[in-house]
Length: 325
Image: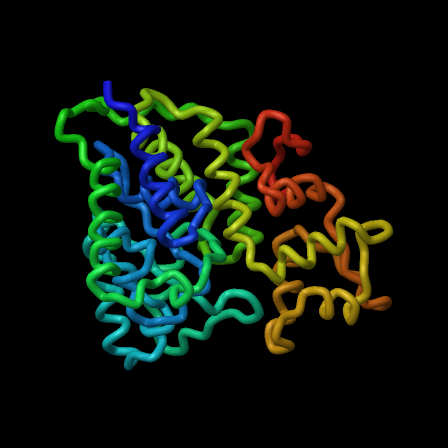
């Protein structure tokens, strides 16, 4: 039986020493999207990271061009007709894993204008946030050395992804559901605002867990896979919502004035309706006369679990319930 963990260790070591990327969970999430998994839907990911070049081929997350990450800022600069056509082509190939790169994620909601197909792209993608060492700080000056580094990265990724000996099971891992799965999936969908319905969010999270278990050659999902679900759930919450929830969690009675909360969110003023969105979703409360925002009492523990990366865990603080209550 092949030791997949040892091969992953070798790949992680190469990324740490050559690219200064030491986020093991992020690495495993990306590889889970790439590993061929029988009868399991493909994963699309939006990587929120400080990669500002529109050429993503040389980035560490391309794994030596094992796949071609797509720059979302580049997509937004295209003519709407061309961008919509390109997205439609991607959507017509649902079995292909895809990675989209978003460097503009911290203080504003990226504007897609008349690129109407973007809602379908964003709606089927999970979010992963990674702050990495800037590429210029690690890229070798000698182009031959840089190519060698990329070739080694590709070979190490292939050693993890390819299964020529057929050591992995022929069937996909059995789905073992984590605690409060549907509750946290719905909270993730409502906090993030990227997906149209939480059922789609739940299906995509389930695919990630199954793929990650298959990456390691396991026959069913377990707590290690649930940990990755907690990571992408936390990363699916925009940073300004993270800051708002963290501030409200520490505030007296979990409440704050509009002006104070806006300052803590550090969000472009044109996007302050984000609080109103969470109010409509039943996760924030609002006292209009006093202009005070707060966390909905029924879901304080739940939203805190999600933003802290504790969702789907056996010892998570919140009880299973419907967000609609």
